[in-house]
Image (tube, rainbow, N blue to C red):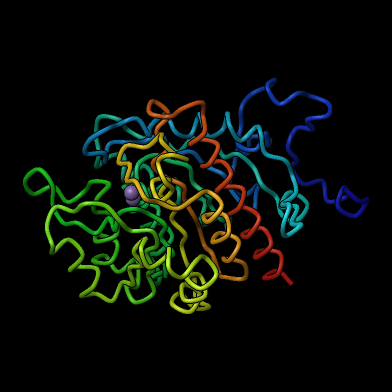
Length: 324
Ligand code: MN
Ligand code: MN
């Protein structure tokens, strides 16, 4: 760190040359805890909520284990050279309030918390939690104008109803977000989609509304650069949300998740695509569906923490350029 950077006195991760990585309190990236969103430019937030899960629960434990594994991450991106903690103020804002026994109350609490972050002018990067949490986050960030979205997932998450007439599960958030005009479906691209489906009509809502679905087979033919070139054109220069479901990655590399689908992205392909987000107007992001009870040796939580770091580098660089 040079003198000009040091003079800014931005929050820094604990120096691993002074305090070993296995020691101390496990915050995201070993950063200081931020008590208020107005203290940071980028807020790292846990959402320990899995009330939208329809089968194998456990993502409520995701934020804590992602924090633990994030202790492995260093401070400079090895490809782009971006040192996010020198560019912007980053902190661990703690966990969003949730309610594990009342889904509707949890949705309200999550929306309120992220509305506070948004009002303070900070960009949130949220660690989940199941994918339903993206809906209340989008309610907070997309209230005034619909957002575009780049969505990495094995699943489209645009189903309609479960267990009778229940509209809120981790299989429905983006249908609800389109219906609520939080997302512009013509500026949504879903990457990595695969796996068996309930019915041939499962993708009809997405297709009828103009959502671009890039199935894993198409991704495998075209590769990360070509696919992200198209994704960037779809979302354009207007505000965009990035949602990363860890089950987009192959379960051989990310087994700790509730709805694994074989034949997925590699971690390396995921990283290549996240780096291709540079220059977009990203207003928020999440990493969801990390489920420690199904994990092996923390490898899925490490993948989640590394996805957060990739997002952080892109967002920190973007905020710095936007500021002048
Ligand atoms: Mn999902
Ligand atoms: Mn999924």
